[in-house]
Image 1 (cartoon, helix red, strand yellow):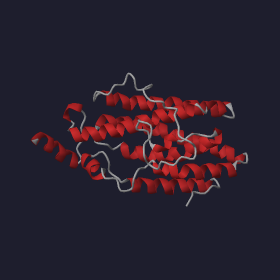
Image 2 (cartoon, one colour):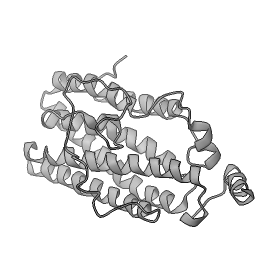
Image 3 (cartoon, helix red, strand yellow):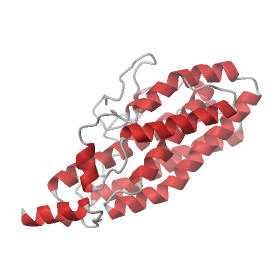
Image 4 (cartoon, one colour):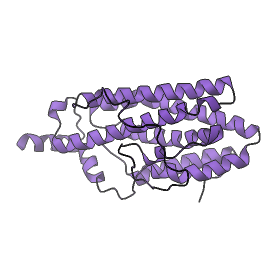
Length: 253
């Protein structure tokens, strides 16, 4: 108990850990939850974009979509390697869940999970064609960069290093989406793009989780979180609304 408390105090003062053997049980549970959510979301996101590659309108767009599919799977693998240090069964991970499974388009599950894995709720909804996939990538791409900037400061050093390596690649994914959306808007897709923004905006917002998370104080004490869901969501709303306005689109209410 003394050792556990001393580690807790160390973490509360901003310390970092780098060895699974030094991780207290409650810290381990929160850390594994964070990693599983990221890995499952990347797997589901990669699977969703894989299904849309053949709808790309040109070679450049097809390459961009394929790149996103590949790199998201790679990111899942990087974090899964950290999970393996804690005994996670990595051998079956790529196939143990139906990563392409989606709910009905008109479903509304808020921030809750569905289907037995830990993917963010936004990855339970289906893409409807190329433009819809591009809009979703723009909105979620901005959300991912906000979230990864937070997670790059986690107190488990190997995971923080993995997230810091992943962040610039995910930032480029968001940029590819923005480039693709600008091109679609130039071709007259404003009305359809706005309809897609209206659909995805609340679903991406829900991916930040409940504003009053009951685990935040514990996560802060452990150094696994520094800012609240509400603060991260506010950053995303402001940043993404400004981007949409620049493109001639509007952020819903």
